[in-house]
Amino acid sequence: MKKLFIIANWKSNKTEPEAKDWLQRFKIQDLRFKNKKVIVCSSFTLLHEMKSLITNYQLPITLGAQNISPFDGGSYTGEVSARQIKEFADYVIIGHSERKTYFNETDEMINRKIEMALKYDLIPILCVLDIGQMPNSKIIVAYEPLFAVGSGNPDTPENADNIALGIKKTIGEISVLYGGSVTSKNAKDFTQMPNIDGVLVGSASLDPLEFSKIIEVA
Ligand code: PGA
Image (tube, rainbow, N blue to C red; front, side):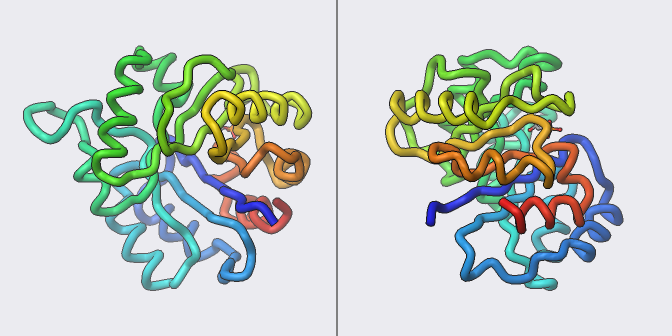
């Protein structure tokens, strides 16, 4: 049985009470015997409280951040460095298409962010639009075609699987996920493909019951 990553990307959503409510309503208690790794990528402001609640409630969830500074610590107002994130999280999303669209993130910045993550032992979840240029390092890659993100119009499992295969041929045996309009209705269609190792879920991850269902069916 292959190892599956089921990753929630909450984007700029949820306050502390809302995050607490989500964790209380999250249904999955025990994934020890299932081959599924659940990661929730929340805003920086929630990481501290999420970490303590996940421990208190003994939830099988690992934390991730959604962005990282391209610089090491220092005089970079407003940035959060890899070393700071590592206090709370083990994963970090890098290069999401929304960061390219709204914050002009370049490939050079993305490469620096990957370097920073790896320096402080954070596992990068690198979002890509197609096969293209790939860094040759220990990362997770999420194929997220632009048309599918937030649109309710996912790619076909067959095409996503082909891209995942292409990525694996380029970088080697890494985990490749699919992201873009994943719901509990289509998650299994993607995870059952031979080259897809999980899903990155945006909107559908905001509802704890829907996200729990995605984990169950995947
Ligand atoms: P979506 O977002 O599931 O809402 O399409 C996916 C993502 O942006 O990672």
